[in-house]
Length: 213
Length: 213
Picture 1 (cartoon, each protein chain N blue to C red):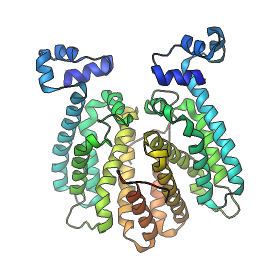
Picture 2 (cartoon, one colour):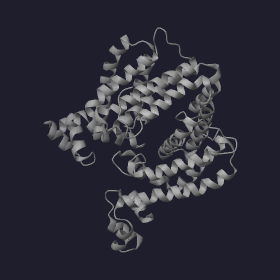
Picture 3 (cartoon, helix red, strand yellow):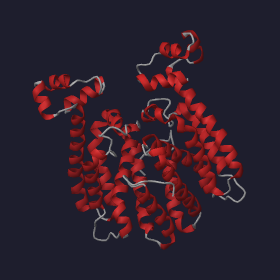
């Protein structure tokens, strides 16, 4: 997988053959095909490895973080820490995200396992001693927060500031804004807006027939 | 330009030569180079043409549309109407947007003219007989709405629903949500949230040195 990532970056994804990957990794072509039937599986394995590392980095932080703000920040900090060494593969990651037909695009049905696992981590983040989330929002919030984290990732991919400081600024600010929005959501004053947003999410559910509301 | 777009789509951007474009357009290579010094200029010309058509389609609608909601809807409807014939070029459009180094990426400094013109259209949309926008937000709002319209465009590029009905559903819903947010922004109850968002925008301004707040 490491050999493949390097070759994808150096020669481009299309130009890299499984033979070249096997050679760079010092294994036979048959051996390479035994583990990865096609190139896309190498990238898929990478995404799964990054996700496992993210969970491993986030859970200890969540043991001590209290409150929505600190717990969201913990999950996002863990993600940025885990992906930092891969910033020079950004273009490669974006390539998948950019193509709606690519099964590695995080919104593609074939990526639903990884998406669900990502949402589960946000579900964990939203569970805590003094945390109260209104029920109708609780069902939607993990999915929304996961989508939000994809937005942070997209920003990081494009971020050429030293040490990706801009992404950390964006994260700290948006975690604050998101936390305030969650706290405000249960206020009766904002009920019309909240109903509007929930109606939008319902109407845009994948697989739902659509019409202009 | 039309010939180039067809070739980019059929053979891919990299594989298409200026010679092939000139041949397909029935002009000499020298003639093609006279108008377009490089391939990227053909795409840039396309974006400028689409923008001019957008303004031409939006202004008559803005003559009759009253209120923030109707006027935002008018600008976005005009955009979707103008770009509809180009949906089969989506991948091509996304290619530019996807690459942070590409000057045709709408957030690239080289695209700032087009971005400013897009923002100016939203400024016009926000001017109307009974429309009151708080001053601090008025400065940021056209830029935010333009970024929002890029989000709608990104959704449209990925939208494979019949007649892109999903994009129209998303647009109607989000115009409603955005309109409510603008109306709520001046409420004293939401002042802390509004200050937070304005601070974030200030800290993330292009060219500004960043640090974690």
